[in-house]
Length: 241
Ligand code: BV8
Image (cartoon, rainbow, N blue to C red; front, side, top):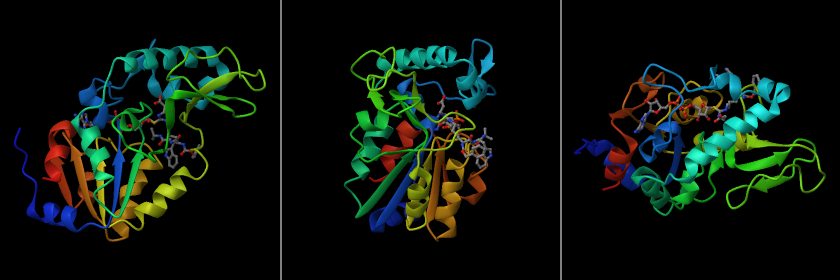
């Protein structure tokens, strides 16, 4: 599908020295990963809105139920692959003197497409972490252990749930890069979850050119210098042409 990319954006892409990309669930939509919102509804699991099942409160109250939700999501993700948007964003990391990819996604598809040093603001569904010693455990190649291999205590998903703090330093690092970038892309996010949704505003205030890619308008759209209405898998590969 032919997308119209402005001459301004093409020039800025060609001249950019420091680029920051913020992605949300929409960048994985064409890989078959369900988004959380949009289409008039929100993800629901066993009658619970995902803000309830994916909350720190629920984890405190019923860890097994939260594990059941995340075990299900890993099962769905196992069969899914990166799409052209993930691969193009991975290619971008070689195109600029400084490139920062910040994602709200927990699906690991950016890394599967070749992106490195991904700033995962909300963690990763393929990792578990000990509730006591915080030891991490990679579940991408093996089943979830019953308890922490280090200290024997309960494991939890290494994902930031609603009402929980982000990984130490992750947002601060992302915000510092946003404050220095000259070009910022906001791809596939409803821009409703904070503090992630504040990052494009940080970039804009620092003078960056901000471009949103989304089939729908969002609360950020009016802040952006350019809004490209379309799907990430179709739009993103055409930006750097
Ligand atoms: C925190 C992991 C400190 C779990 C997630 C102000 C400041 C600080 C906090 C808050 C604040 N105001 C409110 C809060 C609390 C809360 C919050 O933001 N609530 C919202 C709902 C109002 N924030 C927090 O709790 C954060 N913690 O700030 O700690 C603190 C602590 C306590 C009290 C105060 C401060 C933690 C937030 C992290 C929550 N965990 N995920 C899990 O995955 O189960 S967030 C969850 O939403 C996902 O990570 C997801 O990535 C994220 C955002 O959603 P999107 O990625 O945008 O996805 P969505 O479905 O919404 O939209 C998809 C978009 O794609 C749409 O626009 C659609 O049009 C578009 N699209 C569709 N198809 C395509 C497409 N785009 C392109 N191409 C396509 N093909």
